[in-house]
Image: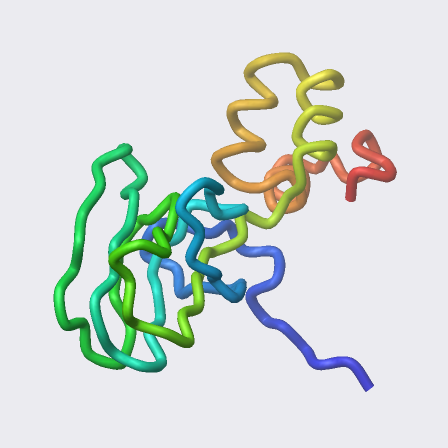
Length: 135
């Protein structure tokens, strides 16, 4: 039996709770797959990171718990904290859906689709049949 998700088709916003998480492995040369919205540190210590804006920062003696930092890379050198998880929120649409919507509805449709999420926008504007497979 599947779990009912009341908020599945609601548009995410910066105030939304995180909805996806991934293990973060410290690496001096590779960026993460996503810029994080927050990091969870399972075993405290120092955290040396490259922030979303490119600045390199060391957070000294971080405690176990959630830390609302937008990080693009977790550096191995200078990081002693372990059991780190990155968290993001999902916007409710994929790039192919957004691009398909933009192709059908033009730039204005694309901007609205990015703002609300393709599925939510289509439902609000009665375009479900026009978007076909994208929904």
